Image 1 (cartoon, helix red, strand yellow):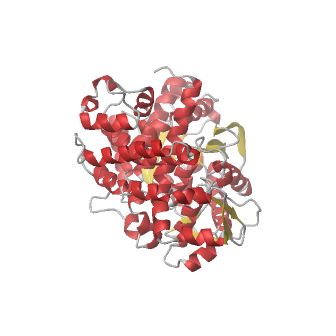
Image 2 (image 1 turned 180 degrees about the vertical axis):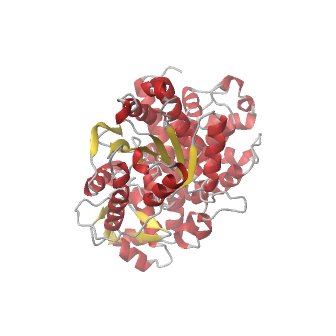
Image 3 (image 1 turned 90 degrees about the vertical axis):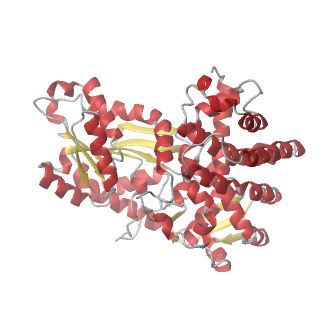
Length: 519
């Protein structure tokens, strides 16, 4: 599939707008049901405090995240001060209100996909007539509103995302979409009808759009994995959401389909790990006396990163020559005991020597004590590595008061409670202060996810997945801050950043992912 630069740019934009649609549609449905938009229309300029006073049934923290996501789409203006969160309607708001019925109609699809994704793979899909009817609605509405630029450029893509992305994830997660020529499900007449209505199939074969989106189905994986949140958005905003933070009787998380999440993130992170690998190669090509004794991955998951690092060091660094005399210590740490068992099994199967230890990212002192007791190694003697973990740490109330002036524009919650941005910043500073003694010698190499101000996102629709990140991570009590806020917290913790090993993606202007070596 040879695409021009313009085609690649257009299809990437489509991917991002689809994910925007997945994450704002259920929010729009709930806020409309409770007449929140009517209140915003009448007030025009208000605050989070006034909105929660008017609608006390809402959990302020999750409502804040919901409103900010609409600001990222340009429907609202959103600003944060030390005292208040201000909300104001924009010139786009009136046009947006006219299209709310379309979002309400497509919101019902979340129940369909939630049930589908919970079940073992089956094909043909159940009640394909449901998908055909939505696809028909979509194409007919596009034709009816062909002169409505707002609908054509934004709303239509949002609705298409709600319908199409979970379908592609369902097929991609369970099937080998890298070999579309042998994908027999594409011969199904009902599926073909849906794909033709969505312009992915021309009756004989996949269109260019179809080939691209099927090949990139994993790119929707992380957003779609939070389908339980989308399906139960009203419960999160106004009801008893706490059971979703518990595990079911089989030990499965209930707010996310973790298997789909891992599949989606694994496919999407290859670009970042290329840079990550380059830093590791530099470190383990140093003179042996300057190298760490080994590596610890806090938040090791299934051990895939440790396996990858071992193979990298074995194949691409001089350290291989010293492994017999100076064994490379590999340790996986995780808060989830099932993850530790998975890491141990997978690394043994891959013939990689490694140990595991239970550990909380918020308590490095305890990890250090366990390492010394169990393996006779200090945490500070190891290179620490982490992948998209620090924003997912349990929130600890700060012991100090934030004295800086660089507030995040993010919206943060803990179990529905609204967290003030100054507290989030101070908690992040204190988090790194705890780690400072243990990374000062060999450092912490980590990949992190970031938010971007809603004003910037609204000016760059289709160029960033920020809206999707903010909603899925915000409603699951994760704390994504802007890159400059992260770097400021690291500096305030008295930790230095290696300028030779610092990277931003996709650009300096809109940095949603960073890699940094700090010590």
